[in-house]
Figure 1 (tube, one colour):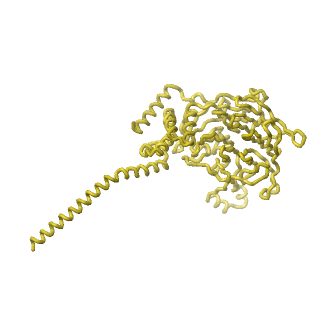
Figure 2: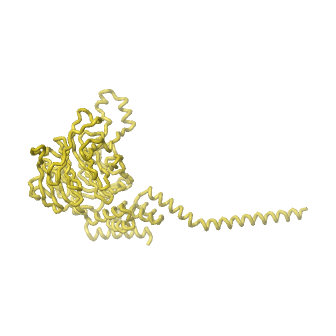
Length: 486
């Protein structure tokens, strides 16, 4: 069956499926979408649907009060930072309360948190808390016993009047601690396993355009004072993957690099191979409510080459693959289950996504749909190098939505690896992937030239032989003519 017949059949099956059953998004209070090559919003089946909302009352621990963060370990244990109540609520994978930690012993006396903003739990179940108003990072055992306090960092590179105000925290397997602190434009603060300040990672470069520099040069002193200073922005959130790469987000309206992936040397190695860099919404209003670019306040590494970022401005989730391509976006603001008031953190519990909503004082739990499962499975197989397996899954995705460009690109890349260059070109064209289309075209052109080389050489030899024979015959005739004339 030709590629074009396959695409037509997929479109027909997609239409029949839509007629036979309502779209998954019909049951949700939001629309899921992605962006195509032309910056157009393309609707998608909902990748996740809301399942339930978890509150402090439903857990039996009393109402949450302005919760700021949560963390879920690899084995599914859940830790909620209930900031307004200055406590940590630890749950097992079945959402049963294990313990509540609202104090610890320091220097022989009871000590409490003060408006903590960030929490992280290591593989060894050590709990790291960014205790914001007390200017410290508190490290506890899983039972709540104090291990260490990181506060008042000392260094020559810190200003004399520096005040340590930690907001978010994470740590790697070596025990190094990474802290997002208020007012730290130099980057993410890094501490060693003993709590000694080591320096900054992921310093944000200042970017200005020529027009800004010209206006500043021509402006008066009063006008310059009112202009935006050319200073870096602060980081907003931080997470870490299994390989020790630190993922972080910034809130910067002038940058296209609001998501970073920092290697152990502090260099940003995030791939941005999609049509647009991963930064949330591509199109948005410039004036009015919810105007401006997305404000990515949290990020979660999902594994399988995927990560999801949380936009607090329009209360949406954006999922990306390892190449930096937007897989899907969904969410919104409202009072219904599945939309948010003030979302502050996103995590994963098994195959579910959970979002902590400070405004609603609850946790929204989302379960994947068939579409979401297929997209995740295909992305993971491709990331793990199993491109042959991903093709069948991508074809199933196209049966559900024939306008999903990433599926075409995924199939095209698999065909390219199988040296089926002509077929790959067709899929890259459908997926608007110019880079890989050019690669497939060059390979196909070389393939055609190699196939036709024998025939071409034979034709060339025949022509050459005919030309030589013609010259010989012509010379013989000329000599005979000359002899007759003589």
